[in-house]
Image (cartoon, rainbow, N blue to C red):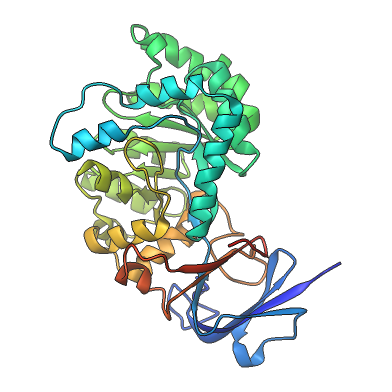
Length: 393
């Protein structure tokens, strides 16, 4: 049986459709309403013109935004890296651990422990307005552990990424070529049924350009769509490779040449530059220059990169505040990138907008405008969340 619900008395509604609102990219409608039918948006517009619905929710003048689309996270893991973060923030070098610490803990954890940790982070993110998330493997680095990570993740999201090529497995420290063979062979065969995407950390100390190309092309041959950890720590081939292979996203994009920016601009309809300011915050690294990318015409997404080592935050509002404060984005651009931009990075047209036919994913803010996400950093502004048409928080 079809049921309808109306959210009325919305002070400011972000639709991300210029044609529905004020003509800006956010498509703002003031004094608005949204009507939901089952799990889809059925109608948006001025509150006074809203059609009747079975149920009504009074937003009491709050702002409404599309649910955040977090298109880059690493949530299937076990263990804790507090000591590493504490050492880094105290100005000391930290030689032990890193990703290998998490790999050891993840391998030792049971399926139930990994799933419980995943769900804890998902619930944490949903309370902050995230309604779609992508997550990766990459902390098992064996055939069995990578496949189980993806199997666990695929029970909770459609956006699952095979990242066997996170680092060279400690088991293959003296044989990186052998590990690439494993990642493109037996491991890929075991993991592909659970994944939509294939990713690689293309960086000094991880995988070089030719290794990354082999991994991504093998994944594509197995039916997975490429995305790339690109140019995070230094200049390198990652961005150019992402564009060449028509990857859905090049993620991090911190160290870019003019040629990299030009390539991303020319591929704006295919490859999204996904910026992850939580990583720079947590490592005191150079900020990505979002202004440079936007001014060149690059499509930009914002995501959390939630992981236990370099960006342990599930908060999209926090990343929006960082992007506005330190990366040259306006509040409007940051919100678009955290919603519609993330949807573009996942090649999804049914999320990231509040338009008729889209999935009914939205958040109410305890504020009159979306600008408060950057204006009031650290304040828990999300007061209610609808996911697939159901109020979940």
